[in-house]
Image (cartoon, rainbow, N blue to C red; front, side):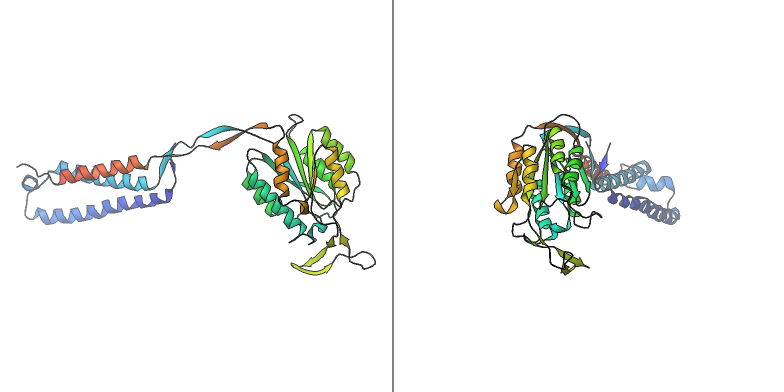
Length: 333
């Protein structure tokens, strides 16, 4: 099937019937004038070309114009769907979207720094599939496992503290949702990267970690924040108007809580990394993931288009050249 890379050019084909109409009107006027002085038989005997040659010349002109315009539309073939095989690991990144992640003890904020590190991870992926889970008081699968890393990046951009209506920090829920996002095709090649400040309001993370380990999932935790902590800003129309306070009116300081993250990674055979300890923490985690067994994925992609415009352009120019030869060849009387 022929594909056109610039189909809008085909609108210029409308000029062809316009030219034909204008030439027909001009010819009719000329024939009326000619008939006053010559009979048809006499005229075509002394003319450079006979009537059949004139018709052939006109046909070649219009055909050449059609072929040249069509060649400019970029015709091509070969856009077939090909099955490709890739090797990699399934990675689910679970990003903490709770209010505490808006604290600015890491510039510009915990959540923005976490997203920046995830972007660097996505840029480093090769044959790996990636998925995204956002969690606060509840967890939500934002992006199922995919090899379309650009789509994952776009979905990551819209993940922030306002994405989920229920606030809190449900680490256990995030682990279960992330684990269930993997296909049931074996107990290997499955990794969760947990990006969080470690706050947990449910206290049943050990059961969730054991559930993930039973499914063959390895969890790497990335601690976002500092041990000294920072207040949690309260926004109104995009501006900080106050900081989150307790019942006594005192400003709440949110600290990086590492114990939960350590336990989750330890129970699943993964590792915990504090973001401020390593210059490129996600690269470090991805290096460890690269040492795991790879899984073969089958995917489809479109093949490249083989351009055919040269054929149509050459045919059009040839007709113009041939028409030029005919036009300069005088008829023998």
